[in-house]
Amino acid sequence: MKLPPWQMSFQWKVLHRLIPTGRYLFLRKLRTSDTCTFCELSTDNLLHFFFYCERARMLWNELAVWLNNDKLVISCSNCLLGILDAGIALNTIFTWTRSYIYKNRLSGNELSPFGLRTFICSQLSTFRTVAKHRNTLETFDATWRDIAPIFSSELSL
Image (cartoon, rainbow, N blue to C red):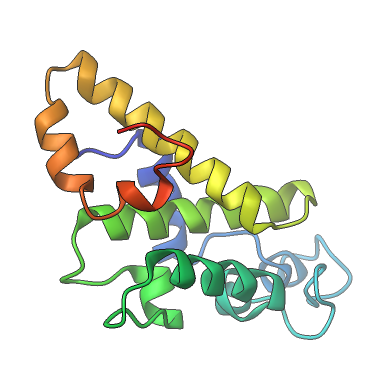
């Protein structure tokens, strides 16, 4: 499964620490403080931005509940980098969660589990439509068979 260019570009920016966190903007003199604008408790670096901020943690905790996988440990490193042997579907969900956090924090919108769920369902629906158009629906369904039932009430697969 190929990710759209914007998602690949976004992940590249995450890996190269080019996301405009509070610390990044402060060092470039674009902000007067490096404190997180959401929780206002800590320096807003990449790890805080995506994982340690209480608002982001709420989303990752909710995602862990949805996935209901006893073997899955959502840590800071696998939130940012993915999990090597977890499969493309789960790592794509992690990428979508990061992009949801990024887009909402930049626009100043609140992070919510409902918003994340809606965003993931929208992305899955788009990917499924593309797979249908390309006659690769069987491959799509095989790739997403473990994840899709979690979102079955919002998405008919």
